[in-house]
Image (cartoon, rainbow, N blue to C red; front, side, top):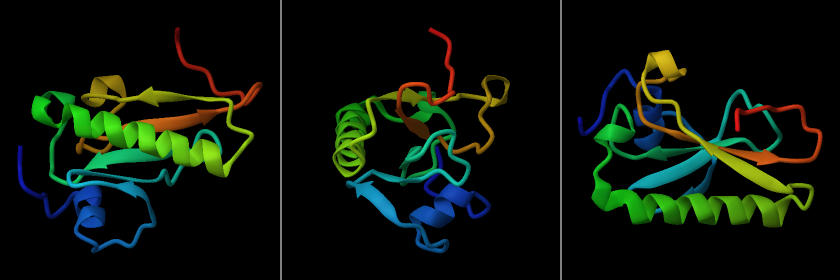
Length: 120
C-alpha cells in the first residue's frame, strides 16, 4: 500500500488535482460518477489512499466502506425514483478486468430491462 501514487488518476481525484463532484465522502473513501457508465447513475467508490486491490485495503476499514456503499446507494435511489436495485462489483487484478490499478468499487443502479448483465 502506498500513501498516494503521482501517476494514478484516482489519487489525483483524491488530492483535488482533477476536479470531480463527490456524491458521498467519509474519512477514507469517496464516491464519484463513473466516466463510462454502464447504466444511468453508475458510480465508483474509491479509497482516498492508494490501495491496488481489495487485498490491500485494511480490514479495519470494512465498516467505513460498507457505510459509504449504503449511503451512496440510498442517495442515488432517493434522487432517482426509477432505480429499482443495484449491483456492487469490484474487479481485482487485470485478469479480472481491473483497468485502473487503484482499488475501486462499482455501484451500478439497476432498472428493469436496462440491458446490463452480470453473472449470477
